[in-house]
Length: 434
View (cartoon, rainbow, N blue to C red):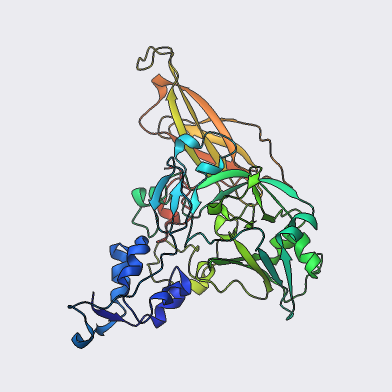
């Protein structure tokens, strides 16, 4: 259009950070054709708040704002597996379908994709990682350094987007802002690479007794994404934070951080920064939009303009579970002779390395409960970083129209019975039974 906007005050709140400045001084239209995630009413409404006028008619060409050629940063993004359920194409946000969530290890090709921007280009030969300990000195590591100077550690860990099951909160409580993920913004993989603790120690950080002003470790990705974790997690010998260069025994796929990503097991996946090229030890959290003004939760009564500084950034995850399959295993499917059965299975997960110790299931809308059978995990790691697979078989005659599920971790944390008590306008951490 021909409207003019002053978005100076919005830059800190823009989900893409300063990437918005690519359009400064020109038409926003070609960028929105590329960043299709903007093409929705809530974004138009936000932009309208910053409207200050219109372009002078003398500056228009054939009644329109002149448009310069715009380079498409997504043009070299990888081709995705067609089994993924795509929510947005640019940037790519796609979840694993329930039918692909049946195994303990999620295959790379169908592991959910959560990108905030484009997939940056770069290879192992040109890769470098800057470590800044906050003392004015920087140390640089090559890919060869990471592979040869440090012990390769393997962990099996579940990564989950904070918006997993957001769709359920919207359906069973109120409207939420964000991608409407179902149950597939989660996956489990084996990750390999050096421990972050070891690399920081090599760079000169006293990992057993960090300086008092070393409170956070900030990560910066090659495409501009940023996040941070507390120093205690970063240097914990049992925290298993990795600079991963392998996923399920293969080099990282481009969508999952090639050549190097951070893996912070037990924490929300938003802290496991992909394509990491700089790490800073600091006295404050990352100043990025994604740390300060996103991935937080608020009270059910707080609207869409909360005090972001008051809320804590999400780190460890609460208990989560989902049903991934319910199949008729009767001798005569479709019949109901009193002995026919339904086989039900799914996943359960808790953050912080806490093991899932029980999964309760109700096939009659909560009137009665029973316990599912938990599968044994073949996992690597200092703590329980992986989800638990579970199965349950119910007689078809006892199964009602709604199945309920709740998991319990080793600290006896469990899930709320509805979404309303934990409702937040961003739809983060949707973990209720329904």
